[in-house]
Amino acid sequence: MSKESPSQVRAARRERRDRKRKIYRFITSFVVAMIALIFVISFLLPSLPIFDRSNDVPEGPGKRFADLGRQHINPGDTHPDYNSYPATSGWHYPQPLAPVRWGVHSKFIEDEYFIHNLEHGGIGVFYNCEVDCPEMVDQLSNIVDKAVGGGMKVVMAPYPGMTTKIALTAWNFLDIFNEFDEDRIIKFINSHESSPNSPEPNFR
Image: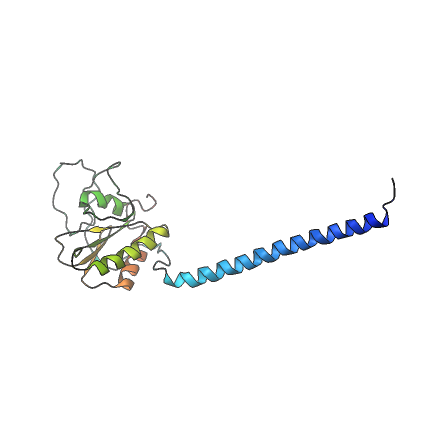
């Protein structure tokens, strides 16, 4: 085996130094990128409305209504009246008619559709002021968009005829009020979304 010349030795040393520099630059760049990502997340996190989910069976917030069951019916079938308005349990359409898509809807969704969403541990956010309170609708939409973007099961839609401007529903729970209250809405969603109180909380 031939001995390397002095120039070959120097070239090999340079190559090793260059390789180490490249590895160092890569590690440095990676660390800087991770620090920047952590900074951005820490900056944005306080602005997100949804922070955690409760795994306990909730006793509130909202008023609790008797469970009317979860019997499936077909469109056109008659059934007894619901015990809350909007409904919080009872007769509803099966798949593929329901549950409806999670997120913000611009048209009224009948109880028989969205009850299936509640059965799956979802939350309903309803409003009755589309014409005279566009700002409030935007505020509600912002919360729902962030919640759904974070993987939570929330549906929002107008609900004409309510006695209040806002109604929040979960399986067997209803909270109604007139003034936008972000903390109240967030607390309801965090308490009831995917809670064991719903019949099928692990389904979407």
